[in-house]
Each structure stands twice: as structure tokens, then as C-alpha cells.
Length: 87
Image (cartoon, rainbow, N blue to C red; front, side, top):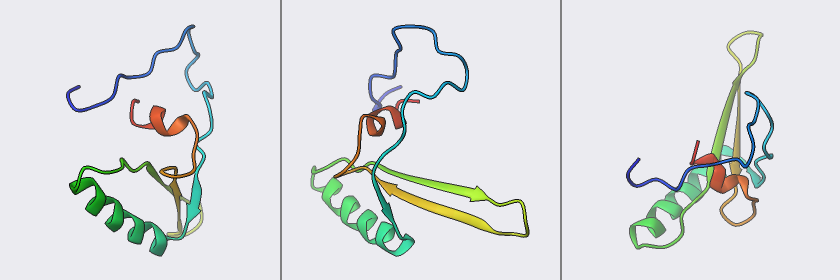
């Protein structure tokens, strides 16, 4: 796909659902995540820094409760930040 990375290739067959690695980064409040996103968008427009943010929304089984987790791997992260956008 144009404008994307190289993709992810494994040296051996991986069963469906196999854990490859955990996504690591800074755990942020929603407020901090929004502030960083604004900064990242500004920096990206000037050609700097490619952000690596992951937002997970988990709908809990009781009521209409939704838990939102913001993880920013831009400054602190691991190899998963590169895998995330290749899937």
C-alpha cells in the first residue's frame, strides 16, 4: 500500500493469535494524549517526528462503561511501534 511501511514478515509461520510482542510506551491521560496529539500534528506539518500513539477502547460487560487507554510510544517504546502500523 502506498505511503505505508514495508510490512511485517516472520521467519516462520505464526499461528493465528500468536503473541509477537507487547506494545510498550507511556500511559497517558486523555487530556495529555490530546495535548500531545496537537503537538505531534504541528511537528508533522513541519516534517518532524512520526508519532506512535495507540488508543485502546474496551467496552466493559456491565452498563455502558468504556475504558480508554492511551499509550504513546513516540519517545519511549519498543519494536512494536513499528509493527503496529504494518498490520
